[in-house]
Figure (cartoon, rainbow, N blue to C red):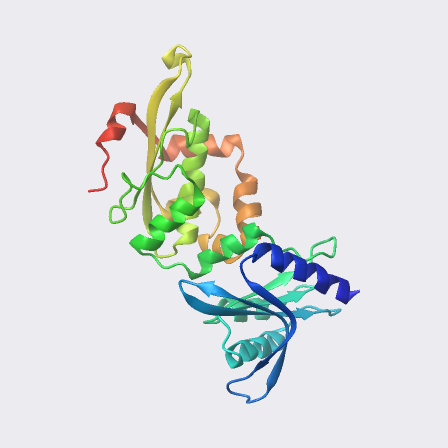
Length: 282
């Protein structure tokens, strides 16, 4: 049965790394052990002109992955000089094992089979794993926002002032402007753990009794600290950063209208839409 899982994993890796070479049951000569190391799957590709190597180890146990298994995998990753690695398990992993992965200086992770006994690896998963290696810099700051949406306005956003602006069309109603300010504020702190505060501008339409229920272009904005987000959501940002499932379940999954409107009443302000053109990156 495990061979069937390995076949599924192979196909999943091929789909998510279409430009990479995936090798099943590879053998790599260890630079420290001076011996051949058996690798369940190897992933080879190019990044910024450099050759990269990832290794995948599959475990089929009746108990959780423990810290000794993780230690052994870390040693193998270093021995074959891999850039990143994954352990696939059908059961899960102990708290000690998870902590050892988290505090390793290598890019590692332990993935579980889902309830359908399939390898739960998606493009979204790999995309969000990038946050673990992000460092706060102008380049990464702008690159990350561009990855998130084409509505990011790089001409008005300002790294030094921690200002992020979105173009018209990113949110077409007041409520969605509120929701996206909350969501993107939290995402900024999740992505960059060195970030202390963020200011987000979103132009949108206001339509209520004060506008006689006509659409009136309005600029919504919020300047918020990481501690404000943590207090409001009652969630530690590091916890959201630790696992994409935490981000989905503990943050995105709890974003109902009541919470969004409560956040707006505390943290979001508005200006006339014309003032958007006065925002510059200088």
